[in-house]
Image (cartoon, rainbow, N blue to C red; front, side):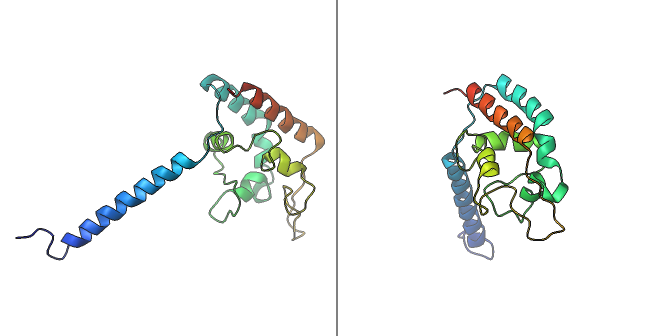
Length: 155
């Protein structure tokens, strides 16, 4: 008797092949994504502690109108997708290049951008939403962090 006959034979075969194709595509995609993290484990840990103290409170304030509140969740339509978990978000921010100096897509560049279509946080269309821009002192903290992180990256 041919084992491929019957109600499940071909179906299981197709499901198996489909699963293999999906996993190979996911693995291929993961290998194609650039990784900008060239920190030593020691430097990454020290910078994450600093990030948690200096920048994370700024990114998480204002709840849904803040950086994390707006860029977390399934409805996010930007390149920056956060979880709200510092232990996941910090490595992701480094790996995906959001702290690269002088990069138009970096956090700092987007906050300093003069184009109303690119600046972060964007102007609120609804007056009940508050999206205050970072102060010069807060931007200086981010700028110093970006510079220090860049110095620690292994070139």
